[in-house]
Image (cartoon, rainbow, N blue to C red):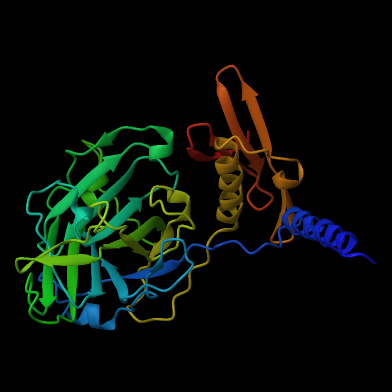
Length: 354
């Protein structure tokens, strides 16, 4: 048997394997992370230190990973979350031997420094979400996005988290190249009222979940005249590429694909109790719908095989409708009988059948 025949046979077999696994839903998908946020029993002093008993009893998240989920970051990052009737609390620890920052004006582009970032999509439809960034100087950039960048939505840079509290604690010395630091930590209190419509009562998502993700941007640096700066290529003088480390991997270098974000469940159970949260089955179907959506958006061929998948032993068949006004991708959930649909502008909806 000649080598060309063997090579051709291997290629045909590989194509069959990909086809089979895709059709029957056996290719492992990158499952978003989940975190259970307990209700605090303390009054917090937002100082960046997290010394309160509620913080001490709460659990750390998994260590952050590279944004694509392919490798482990150079420095450890992890976070905790708590809540009460007024605030959502976030604490994060960022290991860093050289803590520095030079951006001091609010709503400047904070990720040009090393930073910590929060992304929040309360209803999980990938539209109308919020972004927060802060550096080691406690300089903040917060904004509202009506849609992801891929869908050309409005970006309100002047939007603010009203009455937000934040603080940074540095385990070392800020902006001092002569020593080695250990870490910096951030503590943030976001009022639930940030998403309350005028005239409406603020609601707290007790025993419900939100889609949330966290990111850390880390730059290589250079020291010039005893000051830190982002490192530049010595030939092109362009800045070296930043590192992006996240809680729930995106699978792509883009935080603005909210369908990849993690799940945070706000339990009323006692801190430290063995509380479980299971991601709803319809969310698994939603992930599949967004796989189809992203491919269709890129004008990639979406064959019948790609629109079929087995999820929890149920056959899911995705349909694509086109008309003069646009297109949408949809299916009917065998678990809830809801119509699950993504419109051409990327918005997800779950619609009760008549």
